[in-house]
Amino acid sequence: MASELTSSASEAPSPASSGPVVVFDQVSIHFDVKPVLQDVSFAVEHGETRIILGPAGGGKSVLMKLANGLIKPDGGRIRIFGQDITDMPERELFKLRAHIGMVFQESALFDSLSVEDNVAYRLHEEHIPEAEAHIRVVEALKFVELEQAIQKFPSELSGGMRRRVSIARAIISRPDLILYDSPTGGLDPITSTTIIELVMKQRDVGHTTSLLITHRLQDAFTLAMNRFNPDTGKMEPIPNKGVDEKTKFLVLNDGRVVFDGTTLELVTSTDPWLRDYLS
Ligand SMILES: Nc1ncnc2c1ncn2[C@@H]1O[C@H](COP(=O)(O)OP(=O)(O)OP(=O)(O)O)[C@@H](O)[C@H]1O
Ligand SMILES: [Mg+2]
Image (cartoon, protein in one colour):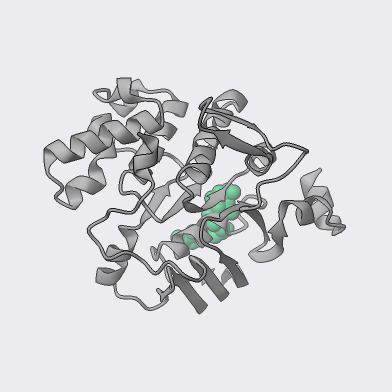
């Protein structure tokens, strides 16, 4: 059942449950001479879904790689699960990443591996016994409604199906934090909505903290203004034009934070650049 995917059962010790899950404190990074992020500060609370918006090249993917410890900042500090990862050695980062699920910008599946082996990849790395791994793969594929594709190879799947596999792979380790980099990028509007519905299910059933980059404002507002109904298995509008209290926004432009706040604050902002960007 989907609900069984919600608790952390990784081999690695459980991360601290109090305090923010992600903290960026005046983080800066540049490649060559070009500053990519400058003095970026924000915090993501437990159970929060933080939607990251902004023009192409604004540093969104770089921010996500920093959050996963894949790259190091030139300045500032980054804390994940209350642990300072800024100078953390790779060995400890590896353990920490067992608690983080990542959906990459381009699905990033292994073409030579079946759907089952792609989804089980992390479990194989953790030497989980094959029989248990299989049960968990089926469970994760059920969550993304793709259990019939278990024997297929990535080349046999549509773009939307590949994205579902990539979400199944991210949730298989029952992560405490999920990083979604443009999970709907390159998909048509209808398929995008089915992916957003899965993200919402993980938010509302799994209560998993997440960062989500999207280029599609419609996806962002769908997430902010709907909720997952476990009885119907579908999303539905939050009554009285309400918004999800756990979903917040961060907008980056040219490497700087230009907005950090709630949905209501975003749509009522009078900042000329934001108004133009959102229109
Ligand atoms: N490894 C790298 N080496 C050099 N430059 C890089 C590297 N990674 C990112 N950059 C540069 O950093 C800037 C921000 O890139 P990033 O991928 O974070 O943008 P983005 O906001 O995710 O854009 P998009 O919306 O197109 O995905 C870009 O100018 C990019 O060329
Ligand atoms: Mg990107």
